[in-house]
Image 1 (tube, protein in one colour):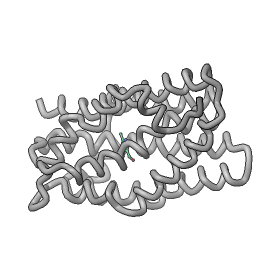
Image 2 (image 1 turned 90 degrees about the vertical axis):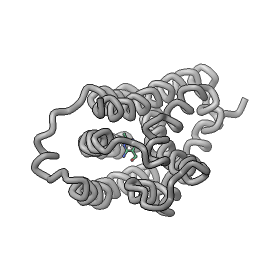
Image 3 (image 1 turned 90 degrees about the horizontal axis):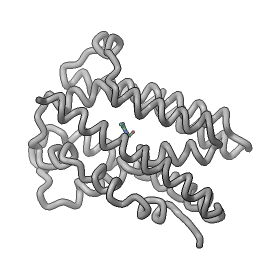
Image 4 (image 1 turned 135 degrees about the vertical axis):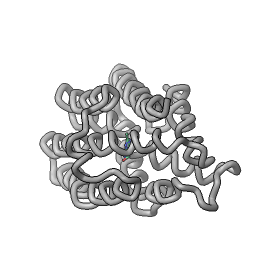
Length: 221
Ligand SMILES: Cc1ncc(CO)c(N)n1
């Protein structure tokens, strides 16, 4: 049977939905998420982005041809040159300064997720690494769509509007679409044993994304 991103997602649909429609995400959509939950999430996301940039660096190293190299390098550059800067500005708007960010203790959930992704890349190949990173890039694009489509979403004076807009942005959505198309192509001819292996990686990464949201909720007490 031919596989693609949707069959991967459907193989762990319960975990995927628990991630995409997590109460933290519903709280952003409905403007009911407590600010301390969001602030904790933002701080840990700074550390997440640093390790995620490293994961794209690992993808650069694992590349086998010019097109893989270019793809990974572009993503690495986007995080380092654009996303990190936006994130620091965004944190400042939420009362978190750069010095605070630089001295943050890393939460267990951040450690678990980021090092899991890096380990998938070290142990496996370029595809293993991409599958481990897919819940991040493709998941946040889907989350932004889900928020946008919900009638419950507060669109007037929502304190989380800038965050929602960041992931609804065309450039982000386009990057997620490209990654999806790339995965569809690579998954089409994997064996069923290989697909099982990739499904486990994808499911675990998805669970770790949901745990990252939960970490934010728990911080609000
Ligand atoms: C934890 C996490 N997952 C995904 C993204 C999307 O880049 C992010 N910023 N943080």
